[in-house]
Length: 419
Ligand SMILES: NC(=O)c1ccc[n+]([C@@H]2O[C@H](COP(=O)([O-])OP(=O)(O)OC[C@H]3O[C@@H](n4cnc5c(N)ncnc54)[C@H](O)[C@@H]3O)[C@@H](O)[C@H]2O)c1
Image (cartoon, rainbow, N blue to C red; front, side):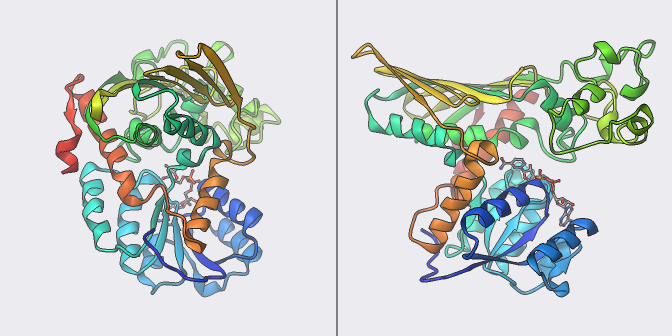
């Protein structure tokens, strides 16, 4: 436990970047900690969001800021600040706000370059009494908590090897990583960092070991300009002759309600043209300025000879994680949606199944569980499970996987960077 707040009755919060993530955490606070938290300040450029927050939480005008920069100039306004802006802003915000004395809830990725991540490792040592709670929310997912419990019980012996898959889902991939905010590593980060530092973190957590080496392969094989046929396609789906047969058509995806975070008026051709047609989300997937890979396969060597393979793919029907943990005396197979764990014990030759009841809220209930864990750590004496220190290694792994991928799979030494 890095903080000692004594008998704090109410935790005060500020938010920097009031988007989807901030909203998810605030909802979790409202549902379970109505009387134990207060929102004091917000930094958010969107004026409509500012108004909504002001009305709902009764914020004073002087505590509403247009940018992170303005907020960071103020003296500390609350106990905790949530840093929930987009990836590239996190590093500058966290170093300034640590210096102002805040405890911090920090969205992943914690920074957008390896150099920044390594410097955060040093910077965090300067503030031993402040908590930086990194949103590696999978550690708080009921499914992964149960798997961890099974591993730690020792019934299956030691972990030998793991196969882990992140199935991004074809329509989610084109929404977020071809047309949306995470499409270009110069604006956000490489796919394995932006999407999967979570997964590398969960492998570290489940094995309880440090990672030694990493190698990776992958490319952007589908969603690139080479696959654009100018005779038959068009820069926007609304003008494309192939639209009806294209599974990645923006018209199909946004009419289907599969994507909930962005809503367009699709009531007539004119409305579609006016809204979707003029938006980044209406572009042909073969004509965007995306460069992040659409599939990547990574191999990791951990301490004690444990190995893992990790596959990320855009080309899946479902959006979920699925994995197999092979131990000395048995295997664990598990997947999300439906949330199911199957454990086979080689000694007893029996199988046990655990159906994890789908918890309410984002990320299979992990967002809510993350906030509960944070509040318990803050108001009580629980040790927090994903501090800044705990999160550095997964980020280093992600950058080195990307380095390996760019260099056609040359293995990279993780221990060397973690020294
Ligand atoms: N933990 C997870 O599972 C998880 C899941 C999705 C996204 N994320 C990460 O969470 C972060 C936020 O994602 P999101 O989906 O909420 O994004 P979002 O775009 O919905 O929200 C970001 C907000 O920041 C605001 N903003 C932009 N510039 C700003 C500035 N200079 N100062 C203050 N506010 C500014 C935007 O207007 C927006 O409201 C990203 O880093 C993302 O990678 C984490």
